[in-house]
Length: 280
Image (cartoon, rainbow, N blue to C red):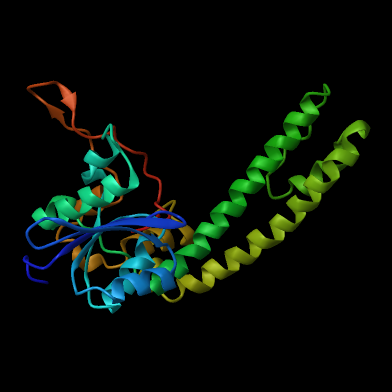
């Protein structure tokens, strides 16, 4: 860890530009700047600065930015957004004020930010295969619902069938007045089905890289995809001292009520839905 007396930099990551606030060892604002959210922009700004503690908030760009900054010798703290409520609840919210707040919180005590650890690059890439399949399936579902809804508006109904066979079973039953309009939709559904099957094969191949997938999938109702996503979400099972903490890690925990105020400290329990990764 870097010395506490080193400078602290808060970086509010944006999709195109990021706001940066640099604090000196005695907590004075030294620099406020805008940096392009690209590898070149980040490298040019941070390589020119002395080694410091850099505080980011987890997000789309935080994984690759944190890796880049670590390679430049900086200490990087990736804050859990649930712990940085001061940012989201502030009446004077702005990119630069967010960056300044991150810097001050990081300077005071990084543990207050409940720092997270990003997955490794390869694990994140493997998880992307499951995320792509999920996106394809969701798209197929939306298109099927769209087709059924349009046909209902004409007083007709398409036959009951699985989403997988919809483009074959329902195509002939489309009312004549809608055939031209829905033909492109059925073409896309046919191509989606091919891609989903290819992703299924890719997931099966990926599962062979992780022996624990076979163990997890022995549980009744747990298939290869669910087991693989669960395993990749945890990445390193050895970091959990107790098995009961795994549920809390993926968001499955009961709400707590403060006896003094009778208000819940946490959101209501979440359903047991596998996390597809986000940016951890």
